[in-house]
Length: 419
Ligand SMILES: Cc1cc2nc3c(=O)[nH]c(=O)nc-3n(C[C@H](O)[C@H](O)[C@H](O)COP(=O)(O)OP(=O)(O)OC[C@H]3O[C@@H](n4cnc5c(N)ncnc54)[C@H](O)[C@@H]3O)c2cc1C
Image (cartoon, helix red, strand yellow):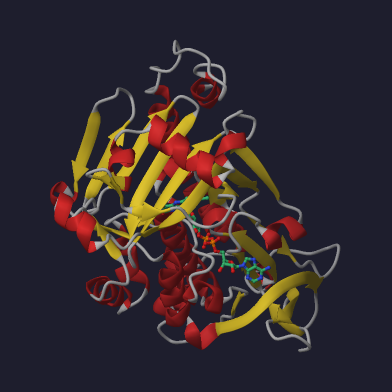
């Protein structure tokens, strides 16, 4: 989207390969986690596409996304700290139907979208100045593998960083965390119970976060009468045993939280039913960093190669964006906005490179320059994120002296995150 937005003369041919199964999200059998989109995302949504923000606002009015009116967290102490969207210069944020949001982004890319799974790549040299050849498996069974050539590859495959890792880059985990979660459906409160108790309801549109002895809890109300409940801890923490089992997970939430427990039950009536699944869903949720973020390989025609304007642009490059480059602890709720900002930035830099600065020498950038710009920008984001993360985890000391339980040695989780 960003390339199309910046390439006003339409000189660049772009292809977006994506293997998502939109049917699965529409059926809502596999809800995607990651729904809190901060209000500040309005800026980048407007920058990358002329109608995207408007579409999301319309979908929200139509009940397809929920607004997020603020954050309420029980963190450093047992007191509830709140921030309100009314004090945010960008207004309200969202609790998205994440599958629908991702589909909206794909629709906006429709002219260049190719449904398929990236399989592998080869380096190719020759007439067109060097590049990559990639194989893409079709989404329909029995179809032929498609082959494409490109000068630049952008890996946006999320945490697996499939393309970058095939090229030889390495994903380094900085903090290892697991998130266990369930999407709860609202129960139909029967009219008798309602008449006895008033009409119980969940009216809390805030993002709720609560620190517990062995990890932290998160909950947000979702569209379509749903609520996500999530618990994050380290993979080696003994609490993972119970967090895997739906019943025990729910019991843990009730025992370890106060404000989250309160939105699940109102006037002694359970507002949400337990999913029928025996186990909660589990996913990697820590921080990871790709090394390197990007690279440029010049194609040298002979041993006595002399750099010149013409050959400066011959070669192939790649870079990663979003979680493929930098994956954040979900505590930050910064994953989507960083992926969108990163995509907008990379698109603008690549347009400068691929169009030769539109004949403006001051804007020209070569392959090495693209890589340097991307690495500098990502490093600034990483350093800021790491500092913020260290600060927030350093605040939680109240479990250090708590009694050990079957779910772990007291304070073990928090000490490991501070270390
Ligand atoms: C538990 C948890 C909670 C989170 N909560 C939040 C939150 O509340 N707010 C927030 O902002 N962020 C949150 N995040 C982070 C957020 O979800 C990610 O940062 C965001 O999804 C990154 O976007 P992305 O486009 O880089 O990757 P993804 O969203 O993972 O998208 C990758 C895309 O690449 C496609 N793909 C992958 N492999 C291939 C292949 N081989 N061929 C073709 N296509 C492929 C996939 O189909 C997908 O469409 C959370 C993360 C976790 C783990």
